[in-house]
Image (cartoon, rainbow, N blue to C red; front, side, top):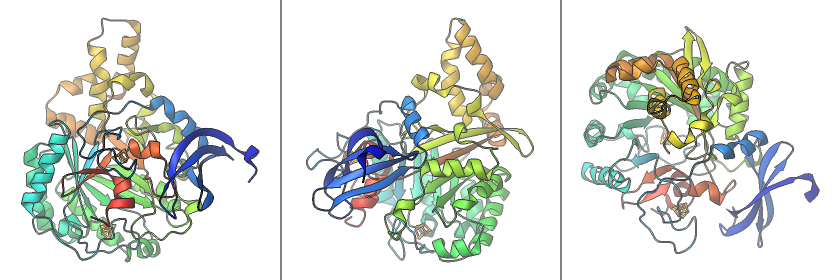
Amino acid sequence: MNEKEYLFIEATISICEKCLERINAKIILEDGSVFILKNCLKHGIKKELLEKDGQYYLNRKKYDKPGTKCKTQTKIKNGCPFDCGLCPDHEQHTCIGLIEVTNNCDLGCPLCYANSNEGDFLDLKKIEEMMDFYIDSEYGNAEILQISGGEPTTHPQIVEILKLASKKGFKYVMLNTNGIRLAEDIEFVKKISNIFSNGFEIYLQFDSFSAEVLKKIRGRDLLKIKNKAIENLAKYNIPITLVATIENGINDNEVGEIVKFGMNQKMIRGINFQPVAFFGRMPRKNITKRSTLTGILNDIEKQTNKMIKTDNFIPLPCDIDRVAISFFKRIKEGKWKSVMDDIEIETYLPNIKNTLTFTMEDIAKDLIKPIFSCKGSGGCMNSMKKMASIIDPKILLQSKQKRVDYVNDNFFRITVTSFVDVYNFDIKSVKKDCVHIITPDLKKMPFSTYNMFYRDKL
Ligand code: SF4
Ligand code: SF4
């Protein structure tokens, strides 16, 4: 390759996908996209796509925040990523802790990152121990718990698990599911609707409207099941975030439709898009044409005719490489406006917590706090006016239920979350990974490194 054709961005450490050794790498800009150029002394030079939109990649730095401290469980011995975890070299606390209550699944998707099929169930005592460990590791303040699997609704004690999570006082609990049981067992939906007064949502796998695509990536046509699950959840007022795994050439042409669908459903509060990552059962092909976070943002812009633009998104300050987020406010039925257009979020960075802030109410509180304590300078007044145009400050003084209802009815969240695998591995990025698996032996492993190196061994 002619080295003059690219622009050097920075040096980093990566992993050779063949020998899995740590190797030197460069991050470069070429033809408007960002690549990682990896140099393995045994297996030669490899160039892998990091981000399609180089401009977004270069701009994201201004949102970066130092990580938040948390307790660690291992020592530094073999070097990252072989000391998970967390080891003292990790640079971020846990924004989302996942407990995989089973590796059993009633679906068996061809692209399952967890390789799930028939499997075992963790007992309730162990699950409680894992929840307590997670809370303690965050100095008593673990915010978001995701109950995951396998398919967690196949666990015979899933209702008790959710009750336990509610009792432990997590701020948000998410149930990560393929939706089959929610569609087929209305009594189950009714039961879980009574466990949480708020701070609970279903994280519902929803990748496509096409029978052909669903058969390819999930093994069967699930559209009727997904629609029935959404209908049942709406009946019992349970909030939903749709989770769409996106693969280029398979369902990347559907992101706009998924956004429009989600924004028009009563109980759907947000969508999380995830570019496919190459671990688990995902076949190792088309890696050079992989879907990326910024590729999905660009596709959303194109496929919604600029109703939603790439510029509406910001990198999540706790993990600028892996998460982009935006909120939209309902102007009238079927019409939405980006909240990010009205606030220069980077000016508020010191007040924003290192976490995946889930609702506009939380964001508003973080932003409004310093305004309330201000002594009346012009800057504060301007900020106050801007915030008031988005969310009426009086709402924040109302009862919790009224606040929740207001936010639920008026705001919509879109996130894109990408993961690191052995192909796009950048050490800086994994050290900032804030989505952590809580393991039964009471460790916390970054989601990406766990799936790359540890899941099969454990
Ligand atoms: S990913 Fe984090 S926890 Fe794992 S070895 Fe690297 S720094 Fe340590
Ligand atoms: S991706 Fe989810 S639904 Fe599909 S097999 Fe894996 S655990 Fe089951």
